[in-house]
Image (tube, rainbow, N blue to C red; front, top):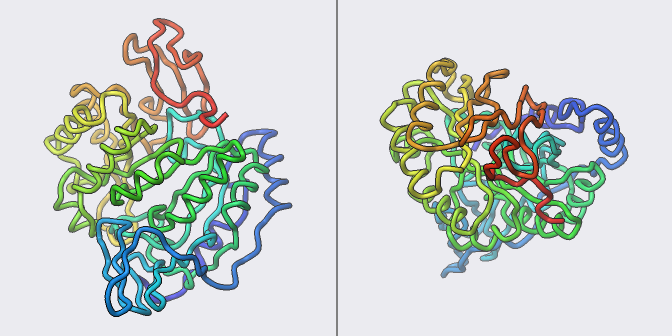
Length: 385
């Protein structure tokens, strides 16, 4: 974890609705709600007992939330930097302490088959359970909570603010929601009480028990699928591939809406063979209808020496994945690319046209292709109504 205080993320994530949405008259309503309901700043970290840990001898604890299974001595913290052993009781320091709050278009997550054109009340806390050398949000994910300014926003207040900003969904995003598990779980429960869904935007690095406890309260999941080799996960992310694969299978088995993002990084995870193997695994374990977003890399954090992903690389890998039988393979971070659009997998009719975060519903009606009536998988109506 970094040891210096960063103000950039707080400034970047302050309440400025104009940077989040461009939805005409709806924006004004949300902006007014924003201005009238800004939560107070937190004076300190939270003191909320964590879930999914075991007490050990000598006031030590064993964290059972993510696959790292940190053994934490009294007065020490786990790898994520946001969970601390205080006298043999494991505490989460970020419960109700988001450092980043926005109203985003759901397409920004990206989720393309989930309530297109809707708004997501998006939040994050400090911390992460891995360290990707290319992290675009490193200035919150790689800091401890006391190093950046935080809001005081309880799960109940989170749901209420989402409702007041007319957001259909709460998105747990930007850093890694697994490390603020308790806050996410309770906010999802409160959101559902208010008719608001919840989506987790995650690396999928979580143990089976907490994942199974959480999923019934979510209405969707997007997993950042870093690569398809253990070497990449270990050397570039300080994580593991195998637990992510298991998490994906659990999400699918529990019938939760799922989309995947693969950030394609030149020379590291852009080979034909690796992406063909990934496509085959997805087809065999998750099915042909899981949307895959192949996104363009931009130099970031500790990997500024690697150039942007060539557009032709994304197009080549997209063709490989579609040739393997995946129906919905998108290209991301290339504004205006035709592979941002959704087409019917049977007749190729244009269903949803996208330009940035703006969408036009073309050939999709009641979850079906207007032309051939093929059912298009997705969450097209309010999942909690």
